[in-house]
Image (cartoon, rainbow, N blue to C red; front, side):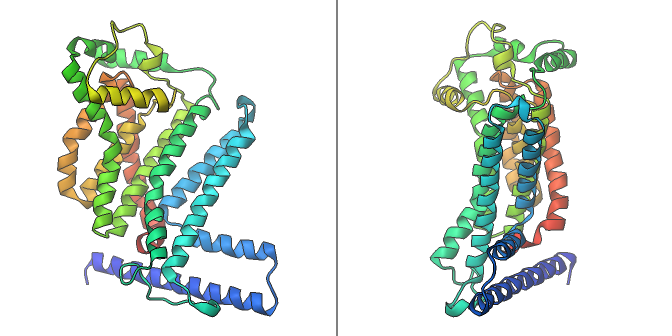
Length: 361
């Protein structure tokens, strides 16, 4: 038996033991209710423990980020208008994640009347509608979580540091290149080039979906959750940096530096629509677009090498497009590459220590 097979065998043993533990816990809980009835506090404690046991590496990082940002909100509450509301929303999101993990785990175990549980109801063998429902949402809710965290940053960018720090990055860009890159690139702008760059910028939204979609289709659960974990670590690191070091981007800090707005076709119009209704002012350093793309690219390298070679040219064009479109400084791009790579390196370690549950349930 080679190392991979031994690791898979140990992971299966862990998953089986964990499912048996859930079944035994549910049987014990049912018997307790029938015999004497458990107090509400004890019941909540037991169910919370079961929900935590159902969480995997991704949830460990996601809940850790929520806890960290909530602690910062409480610590610097005087800098916010409604700190209690923000903490309450974060607590609600954390509770939803826990309930989702708990529900998916329960559906995977399966239930028969009288509180008896049955094993052998793995969704890959005979999935029920309930299993399919919870399995789908357990695997795809992370995309909504990323969106929530990014949009929330608009309220947290001045939580710790009151003013914008763009002048430092403008100086850093000039020191690196001898020009202001976003301004210098205007000389090459044409409607066709602009639209291509905006198309490249839009491809950011597809990288994680494509990599995880392939892994999901192939039922490579460990690969799937590994890539999700690389991404959430990279995003979490970037979000925390953005809270301490607020950057609003050239779009806001250098509005009079260009001769005209970028003109293009349908992709330019799409970007303008998204930027008008969904733009977050701040959180530009490091670039979360680049960080998320690099984390997904590392995931493709490790789990589907052919997909890495397909994605690489698009990711490189996307990195250039963030500066071309006046959304980021060059330093933002380098910062995103570093945090995306950190997401991959730290995420691999997290998967080794906390990944068994998520890859098997």
